[in-house]
Amino acid sequence: MNEGRKEILQIAFVLVALIFVVKLFFIQVLDKRYEQLADSNAILKEIEYPFRGLIYDRNGKLLVYNSPEYDLYIVKKEVRELDSTYFCEVFSLTQEELRVKFKELRARKEYSSVKPTVFLKQLSNLDFAKIQDHIDEFPGFYIQARTTRAYTSSSAANALGYVSEVSKTQLERDSTKFYRQGDYIGQSGIEAFYENYLRGQRGVRYKLRNVEGLEKGSFKNGTYDTLSVPGQDLVTTLDISLQEYGEFLMKGKAGSIVAIEPGTGEILAFVSGPSYDPMQLTGKHYSENFAHISSDTNKPLFNRPLMAQYRPGSIFKIAQAMTALQEKVIFPDTRIRCDRSVINCHGAHSNEDLTGAITHSCNPYFHSVLRRMLNKGISESPYDDTRIGLEEWNKHIRSFGFGNKLGIDLPNEKGGLIPDPAYYDRAYRGRPWKFSNIYSLAIGEGENLVVPMQMANFAATVANRGYFYTPHLVKSVGKTGKPLPQYEEKHKTTIDSANFYVAVAAMENVVKSGTGQYRASLQDVVVCGKTGSVQNEPRPDHSVFIAFAPKENPKIAVSVYVEFSGQGARAAASIASLMIEKYLQGSTRRPHIEQYVLNGKFLDP
Image 1 (tube, rainbow, N blue to C red):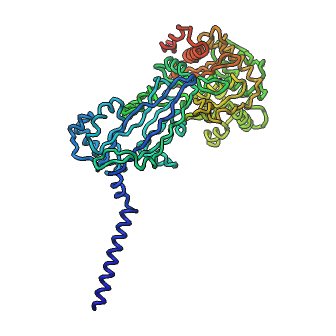
Image 2 (image 1 turned 60 degrees about the vertical axis):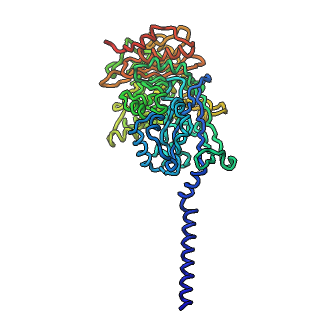
Image 3 (image 1 turned 180 degrees about the vertical axis):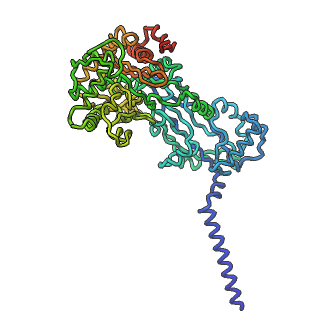
C-alpha cells in the first residue's frame, strides 16, 4: 500500500516538473511577448533611415533634396501618469484629437503595447524645435528622425514624381520583404522608376536604458548596430530653365510639351499641363493635398506626355511619305492632283510634288499615297490586297516607335495604336474590309493613336535621318556618369536614310513658306517642322506641331499638343518655336509671339 502511494507521489512530482519545463520552454522560446517585455525595458531599437538619393538637372542644379522631419513613437507599456492637458499644450493637440490618436493606435493591426508604434507623423523642424526640450517629460514617447522630399523648383512634378508612405497593397506585393509599415516609397515619375537606386538601405542601433527609461549608451558597444547606406544620386537630362519656361507657356492650358536631344534621346523638357507644385505632395499635409489634387477635374496628376493618346493628324503625313518612298510607290517628284471630291483639303494649291504636298498638307495627295501603298495589285481580291499592304505599312510605321511603348524611364507609359489586319478583323467582326473603309489613316485620323512622347521621338528620328535612342530622363545613375544600358542602344527604322532627306527638306519648307511660316520661323536658326490639327468632334481641334532645329546637326526636337486650340500653326507652332529659341539662344526675342501664347486666344471668332 505504502509502495503504491510512493509511486503516485513520484509520478505527480514528475508530471509537475514536466509541466514547469514545458511552460518554461513556451515562455522562453515560443512566446516572444516576455522577451519583448524584457528587452523593451532594457534595449531601445532605433531605426536609422537612409538619406534618399538627390536629383539634379543636366547642368548640375539641385532639383530634389531631403528635408528633416520627425515621427513621435509611443511604447504604451512605458507611459505613466500622462498629463494629457500638458501633452496637448506641448504638441498643439486638442483633448479630442488626443483621444482619437489613442483610439487609432489600439485599432492598428501592428500595435503592441511593448513595441514602439508611430503616434504622430511628419513633425517639421519647427514642430521639433517646440517639443525637443519637453520630450523627456513624457515617459514612453520617443522621437525618430527621418527625412522627407523637398524641391528647389515648383516645376517638373509629373517627371520627378512624388514619395509617400508604402501602402498595404504594396507591402503585400513586396516579394523582397524590404519595406515595412511606415516606410516611404516612390509612387510616380522618376521617384518610382528609380526607387531601387534612390532608396538606400536602412540601418539600426540598439541602445541600453535604465529602469527610468534614460539612455545609458550602446548595447554591447554597438556590436549589433548597422549603418544606413544612402541612396544613389541621379543626374537627370532635364534643363530646368527650359522646363520652367515650358510650364510658363502652358499655364492655363491643357496639353504637353516634350523636347528631346536627338543625338542622345535625352529629354530636355517634359511638360504636362495642367500640373501641380511638387511641394504639395510632401510633409504632413500630403493626404489632404493629394485628395484635393486627385479630385481636380483638370487632372494635374494625369501625365499627358506619356498617357494622353491622340490622333496624330497631319504630322503623320511625314511618316506616310517616307514609308511610301521606301516601298517605291511614289518618288520625290511624284505629282498628284488635289482632287477635293475624294477628300476635303485646305489652302490654295494643286498638283504638288511630295515636298509641296507636305508643305501645304494636301489631304488628297496622301489619300492617294496610302491607296498605292495598300493596293499594289498583288492579289486579285481587293480585300486580300489591302490586308497584305496594311501588314507592310504597319511594319514600317512601327519602326518609328509608334504603336508600342517606347520604354521611357517613367511608369504608366501608353503605347498608342497603329492598326493591323487583326485589329480590323476584330472591329468588323469577320466581315470583309478594304482600303475604302480605312482611308482616313492616310491623314493621321481614323484609328491611329499616338502619345506626345512618340511624336517628339519621331521628330528626333527625322532629325537623325533614320534612327533614335529611347527617350529617357536620367543621364547618370550614381557616380557612373551613364544612363541605364537600354538608353544607349541605337534603334534604326526600316526606312533608308536617303528618304529622310526628302522629309527634312519638306519640313524646312513648311516653316519657311508653308503652314508654319508665321509663328514657327526663327531669324538665325533653320527650323524644320510640321503642323497638325487633330479632329476632336464635337469640341475644337487639338493644335499640334513637331519640329527640330537646327536643320544640320540638330540639338533639339519638340512635340507640342495644345488641346481644343484649333490650327497647329497657331498655339502649338508658337510654343514649339519659343522653346527652340529659348534652348538654342538662351532667351526669346519675340515678345509678340510669347504674348500671343499667354493670351491664349487661338480660335477664330
